[in-house]
Figure 1 (cartoon, rainbow, N blue to C red):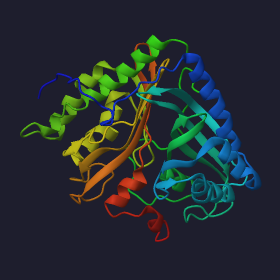
Figure 2: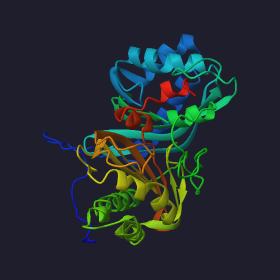
Figure 3: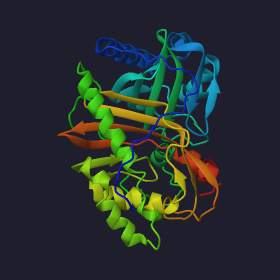
Figure 4: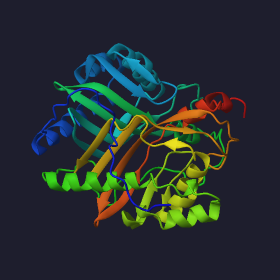
Length: 365
């Protein structure tokens, strides 16, 4: 196994000539403030004002790439009818609480991205789940592409497995990591990050991308490798150079949160690599790569393509099916290293591809 980190393009393959956007730090700050306000208005909107607030936020023909089972929809009316009306009916007192707000430009696109919770009293059915009449925190991660002052395309991952967990069900195998709410950044500036240092933003992004490229070094591909060998190689992997000794890896429900490189390897990385030995991290590539001060973020809509080859990760017998993965990564860079990593993954979508419908399983238990 070579330990050399290759330098390769991690973004989506573009066939057109790109005119790169030069986004100033002041413009970026204004975007964050504006869309934080508009998204809050939508979340807390009465149903009779929802349409107007959504039209202030979205272009008429905007696209939404959403979590399973909402999936891909187009047009502001569909966004209202398929996502927001059912949410507002299920949680009439809905409100939004942000823990990370970052922005930036990637190639010819401008983005604002969020880690937040949509929270309210669960009083009516949503996604077929019986209401609890209690408070629920919907873990929500988003990247919104902006054009002419409105959103033209959104990527939204709500952690539906965590929603089901809070509603009193657990239809899948036990998580290896710790389940619960994600903590806000240790630095306390996640929602109000006012950055005016372009060099710092670039350093943060480059650090996360270099670490990600190191993941292409695959000890599980070595001849005659076994679990102990792979674990040792991962604990002494080139990635180690980039992770803080007190790193936190905040994973989605079904995987859970891990602390330190050892916890990350044991609870996610080793099982994932054993299950998906055949994989391509950048089959399609990232649609977003941005840095914003001490934060960075990448995301791929089906960026990972792999073969489900064992039961180590999530605990399901191998199907040998080819699956794709919807994923985002939010990073906090602190004390020169990656201190925290918030990782929304559409687990329900992955399970659906291997024949596990978590929404049907709820009603069988």
